Structures are given as structure tokens and as C-alpha cells.
Image (cartoon, rainbow over all chains, first blue to last red; front, side, top):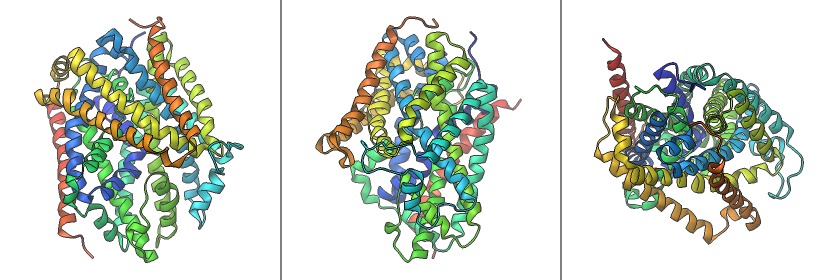
Length: 488
Length: 35
């Protein structure tokens, strides 16, 4: 079976940006800046981008384009015993797929509601009671929440249609529509936010530099975490996407373009988020610290309330905001599904149609747990553990396996072959020392905190289920290489 | 109200590094395509 290829370089770059730019760019970056020194956070963030994010992106692009395989196959072609590392990345991606699809489902519901601001005056009650029908504990699954279930099914249908069409007609074509539209929506949201009364106060809080924070190691930990998580690294995605490149492709410059575009999107979105929060604080006569939020609470509770309070263009702004969320999340979800589908296509010599059907079938099946009334709790628990013990561990293993065992210089020479910007010895130092050391430190800190007290005060038994999912994933990734049928 | 000098400078710093860097990389990529 001939491997699919991107039609154009632009197509590849847009698809990789689509994967990197996701929910975290919208609801996490600006809050991290606000919490960690405001504008001063940009300094550790840029350092993290240059010493860990971009080097790891070059490594993953280099692996995929050199060995022309999904993550497990590329790593296996580098050294047979590395295959399981690729599978751990693929399985971690699959676990993320199962709950990420549910968040896209929620976003689709909100997008429909946005036309009439249908979440009503009490946005918290709408989200928890009318949308999620949230129960009181992770063990009380109850029935499905039907709005969530319908949104989830619609999400999987969209992904199925795009994935079935393949790399060029599906992923590349959709990226060429989604990503330019995403930037247009970003500009619309920023312009709307900065023209609101009080928005400058919010932006002041977002950017006010506190350089004393630069001596706090937690700020550097947050910056490295943000740079790593935001770029879809350690998820088998970038290796898979770059395996569809032609042999004579620029690796280093592509990695810089994708990483800088991802950072630029996050940074610019901060103006829209904090501008709107600034307006909300002004309108309610509160301080920004009383309205600020991040993650799910920001997108589905606080911002809908702010949208209710806008002086004009309420529905238009609401539609632009939720369309932005839907597109950012959909383009990331496509890449997560592709990483898994591509791996089973390579491993079992399967045709795309069947691999996509299987990936989406199992993805839908496992995602149903998050559409129950306890779904939000399981989403929170699994997300917490998979980020540290999935993605970060895969990142560490990749740097050790490729940097120290296979040879960083070999990947660097390959990456430089057709690149306009050359990776120098600095890249070897980042891959062999800086990135693994920083990522190991993050795992150490997270583990210490996990052992000190149950995450978010959840029932320890529920935490054990979350840990159990991770252990099972690692176990499967160890076993999969022993299945022999495979593309050589 | 206007942005404080510190916040304004950080905004400029962020835009220059991210969009300047992106523009530079894109211009290098585009130059390759010129005859």
C-alpha cells in the first residue's frame, strides 16, 4: 500500500497548526500568564518554546519524515525496541480522544444555543443542570445526558466524514478551510473585546509584568508545561503528520512556523479573553480577580455570562466565540484520530476505511462514559493523569531513545538536509539534556502532589480507576509490539 | 484608561517575538519558491 502524502507544504503546515491550536490555546494560556507573572510569563514561555517545544517538534517531524511511518512504526524503524514508546503515545492520544470528543459535543450544543443566547441568565445552572445533568459523585453515572449524547454523535459523524476522505481530500482540505477561518474569528473576537468599556483593565491584568516571579521555579514549570502541552507533542500526532511529507521536505523551518503560529494564536487570544473579562468585571463593579477563570469554567460558564452582558452584537460575538472553540477543537480531534488510525493501518496492513471505522467505533464506545451524568468527573480525573503519565512520559522516552540511544546527530543531519534553517549542536543539547530534565522535574512535582493528597479531593477509589486506565494503557503498549503482522 | 508602560512593552515584546519570528520563518519559506 503506497503511503498517502500531503498535496502541498501549506496543507501540512495548516494541518499541524490545526492540531497544535486547540482548547488550551483559548482557555489555558492567558490564565497561565495571569497567574504566573503577567507579561513577564512571556520570557520563560519563549525560553521553553526555544529549548523544549521547538526542539521536540523538530525531533518528531524528523522521525516521521525519515522513517515514513506512524509513531510506533517510525520508532520501530529507528530501533526495534522503541516500538512500544510509539504505542504508548498512540494509546495516550486515544484516551484523550475519548473525552476531547465530548468537549467538542458540548461546544456544538453551545454553538447552536449562541444564536439565541439560549443558556439563559444562570449560566452555571445551565451547564451543570441542563446540559450535563451532573450527578453528585463519579460513581453515580445515572442516565446519559441527551444533549451531550447528541452533540457527541454529531462530533463523531463530522470526524468520520473527514477522516474517511484521507490525508489530502479530508485532513488537508478541511485544514485549508478551518485554520484561516480560525484566525479570522480570532481577529473578530479581539476587535470586539478591545472595543468594550473596561477591557483595558482586563488586558492590564493579563500583561502587567511581575518580574519577581521569574525567580519562582513554579513559573518556569508552568511555562515548560504550557509549551509542551500546547504543541501536540508526545501524542504520536506530529510523527504521523510528518510521515505524509515527501522526502525533500523542510523540517526545521516547518517546526518553527507551526510552533510560533501556535504561540501567536494563544497570545492574541489572551486579548480577547481578558478584554472580555475586563468588561465583565467593569459591568459588575468587581475586580478582575473575582471574575477570572480558566478551562471548562471559563468557556462554558463565565464567558457565556459575559456574552449575556455585552452592550450589543451579543449573538454575533457568541457565535464567533463558540465557532472558534468548535473549529480549534475539531482540527485537534482530527489529528488525534489520525494518529491512532494511521498506527493500526501500519500495524495490521489495514485499509484507511476500515481503520477509521474501527478507531471511531471504539472512540465512540469509550466516549459514552463521559456523556453520562458523572462524565465531567471522569473527564477531569483521566485528563489529569494522562497529561503527566501519558504525554510527558512519552516526551521523556522519545528524547532519551532518540537523543541518547539512536543518536541525536543522525536526526539532526536528516532534519537539516532540506531545511532552510539549520539545527545546530544547540538542538542536541536541548534534546539530550534540557527537555528530558525539565519534563522529569514536572513528573516529579506532579507525582509528589498526587501522593500528598487525592487530586481535587476525589474519592481515592475513583483516583485508582484513573491510575488503572494509565497502567492498562502502558500494559497494552508493551504487548502490542509482540503482534507480528506489520508493514516492514 | 490606557495600558501601563510595562504592560504595553510586554504586548509589543510578545507581538515582535511571535509574529516577527513567524514572519521571518514564512519569508524564508516563501523566498525558496522564488526563481
